[in-house]
Amino acid sequence: MAQEDLFKKLVAHCKEYGYVFQSSEIYDGLSAVYDYGQYGVELKNNIKKYWWDSMILLHENVVGIDSAIFMHPTIWKASGHVDAFNDPLIDNKDSKKRYRADVLIEEQLAKIEEKINKEVDKARKRFGEAFDEAQFRATNARVLENQEKWEELHSRFSKALNDSNLEELRQIIVDQEIVCPISGTRNWTEVRQFNLMFSTDMGSTADGAMKIFLRPETAQGIFVNYLNVQKTGRMKIPFGIAQIGKAFRNEIVARQFIFRMREFEQMEMQFFVEPGTELEWFRHWKEIRMKWHQALGFGSENYRFHEHEKLAHYANAAVDVEYRFPFGFKEVEGIHSRTDFDLSQHEQYSGKKLRYFDPEKNESYVPYVVETSIGVDRMFLQVVAASYHEEEVVGANGEKDIRTVLRIPPALAPVKLAVLPLVKKDGQPEKARAIIDSLKFDFNCQYDEKDSIGKRYRRQDAIGTPFCITIDHQTETDNTVTIRYRDTMEQERIPVEKIREIVAERVSMKNLFRRLQ
Ligand code: ATP
Image (cartoon, rainbow, N blue to C red; front, side, top):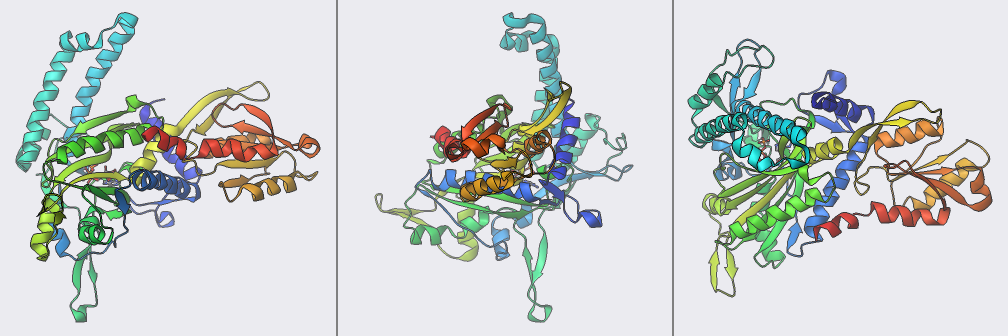
């Protein structure tokens, strides 16, 4: 299936099965804002739990907080967001569509990379077992030509970003003959900077209302609480503070479903370290975070690190974890070495000391910070995209059929098991309810008696429920049920007393955490 079609199907599936809805849909929606439905919220909560517990339970020196969205406006002046939280925008004069200039160029780079990969894939098929990829990349004329183009464009682009040279960004777009995908023309405006922060007023005007910002990242709530947590928790450096919460950005381009939203959620952890050790910790967290992603079993070949073209004003090292979405490799998480920039700025703007006294060295310093920052919604999209499968199966009548299944890792699945009476009589519904009653404190269970058993299985496959328990005539005589496994569709007869054990073992987050050790 073409990747574009796959993405469209994913979006439709998310809506049809109660995962994600367009916000304010009955009013024709609000651009780049989404609501999570009955299954979506469960998946989202499970993702958050996987992240939270992996931070808090597995690291005794990481603790959590929950800071307010509204913060003193000077915080955003100190952090640099008021002056520098900008994206370069460009409009196409014919379609009147707005784009991020940097994203247009990144897409051009990705196109060249794709050409190289196609060449490599073709050769792999031709040469089979004997194929030496490294040698092919180093010698094939077409690959080398494209590689050179890529490097030239990449270095020109990095320089323009680092110099904040907006004219040069526009010139690159012109020279690369990049066209607007809507109008197909190259009729571009100048590139302008656009600040991404939303603002609102706090207090009544009579009192003198204060302009405040909706936070564009949760990190600042951690920085301004650094000393509170360090002192009250008697934390010793190195230590981390984790937080999950909403963030808001007035994104210029908002067309990729929940990949880029104007209201979204972040899971961030700031790790405070001794100056000079930050790059070591940066490498450490880079590894930990990649393991966290790969533990889900979506295939290590679908992840990669991407070095930043331009370091943010606060960073001395930065890398993204990218996942291969249906629309290409894209950032899911950023890991940044933020130096002592934020704490020093807050010292300066607030006039309060934000230092750490090292009792062993008998000196105090402003700690350096390594940050891991991941979007809950992007992670959600990663899980759904990786889990969505359409498979050809043979139905009960021997005919071929397509089943759509979400192979969500059981620990994250919204519903863990469905209990299904084969018929709506002979005490089967009551038995099903009794089983649910005995398991409902442990797992999210669902009861379903409508339609044929085959249809019910398909419905649970589409939701991503890993286990279905079916009650039939035999259940009454020997207290056994059929358990059906989502991924293999295998069925097994088991005693009712074994359900808890079988399900508990497979849906436990412990399975994921063990892979992180
Ligand atoms: P991008 O380059 O895609 O705009 P960014 O580099 O600005 O992202 P960060 O500021 O590093 O992103 O934010 C950390 C994480 O927060 C990202 O890796 C992403 O998962 C998430 N995130 C950022 N912006 C959005 C958004 N508009 N919608 C959904 N998630 C987002």
